[in-house]
Length: 441
Image 1 (spheres, one colour):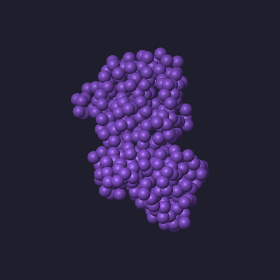
Image 2 (cartoon, helix red, strand yellow; image 1 turned 45 degrees about the horizontal axis):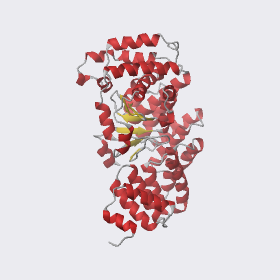
Image 3 (cartoon, helix red, strand yellow; image 1 turned 180 degrees about the vertical axis):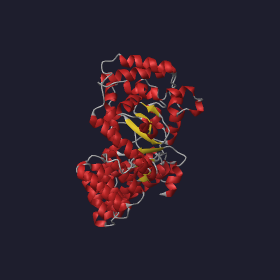
Image 4 (cartoon, one colour; image 1 turned 90 degrees about the vertical axis):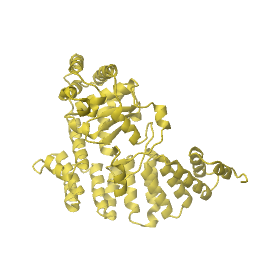
């Protein structure tokens, strides 16, 4: 694991977490819909970085840094920023066009909070896909610059989307106003967001005037959304900052749910296993049907080398949230770690269900390859390994595994044909094509 972590130090890292992703979409989906976009087709990529930044990578992908999320005081501020980015998306002010994005080689690194490890994974654009991210895209996200005209259009579009969805544009104005001083800094000293999105007092005042004219200007965030926003910020902070900082920010005197949640995560990261489990159990007394608490408990136990004990909470998380791919993968991993070959089929069922919702999840494919190997199914194991490599853009290894899968799988089955497809799109050599066709060498 250390080698993977070290390899990522120079790259932006993205975070995938089912609970946080759900909260972000609860906040942002009304805006996407107001813009005439399909919320299910929009992916929100979280980049682990203290920097304050966000950007529109394509019409289907908006990137947001964890630092920006932490700086928002209310859901309405974050929704306002995302409405602004949606204005860029709807206006075509993107880092890359969708067609170019689909052609680009994918080689992302994913920090998966739900799995508690660094895993290679990838996504593809479109509804139902997981995360589509790569270091080159988010390197460009930091460098992209919008013109003042584009910024003005995005501002106006944001106000329209917020009003159309029954929300106030006050949060967007407040967010910009909080960083009004950025315009006096040299470019190199500004937050990346304000390097890319030029701000000025004139622009803020123009935005404020338009916002104040709207009927919903005085609308406020509902209490449940405020509570979820605080949970998201606490969870992100606890997972991305040193535990001691978490204990300082969320001291024992703070008995709120977000604070207790953050401390439970910090205990886990400090490897204080029993204290962490006890903290999660106390939270479960208050929220006995929260799948993400069971997920965290399972994660704590699994990483403490107690895979058998981790299975029950992971299973409960899946019962409560059966359509969440990461939770299915967690359970499959707990089953496989017990090294009971007789249970390989059970793990395979959960991994296949995860891949039904997230076909490009490279880590799930890797686990599936291991599960098929455990039951002696070499052909399906090699095909799963090929899918894993293909999902992260490693076409050479994908082709090698797919060629081996073709040799082991029954000819003309769906699996054999899929292996053939992978070979054909993975730049096969003339010799490999000749071999596949059965022609003499």
